Length: 162
Image 1 (tube, one colour):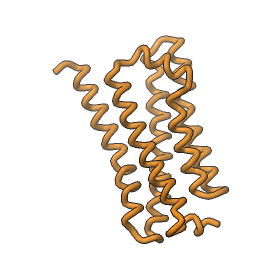
Image 2 (cartoon, rainbow, N blue to C red; image 1 turned 180 degrees about the horizontal axis):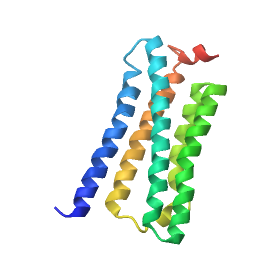
Image 3 (cartoon, helix red, strand yellow; image 1 turned 135 degrees about the vertical axis):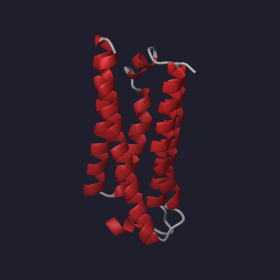
């Protein structure tokens, strides 16, 4: 195995391990009582926001590996996850968790379609792009499950915040 394969396996393993709690929490919310589900859904959002802040730090630290045009682009890309997390937290605290999760879901999904984002894809290997696509789809599904939980008309957990 060469160094590139070892690096890819390491990044792939740590990426899947870091999103495993999101998968477990988004599934667990449906199999618990309503009072426990509210706590689990809030823990999910806290963990997801921490994951976005970690992503911000990771992208910010990668800037030193690239030349100047890509370095400024990485700076722009790094700020987006931190802004998503902060705005999601503010919406959750001042409105309700459904607004925060909905903003995170839409923002995280639309993050992939930013114009300067594709400039970075030209310098990164296709296997890393494929890994990023898989993880972003998994996280969007988890966010969709949590949003569906908050908007569930039968158990109506959002009523605790109104």
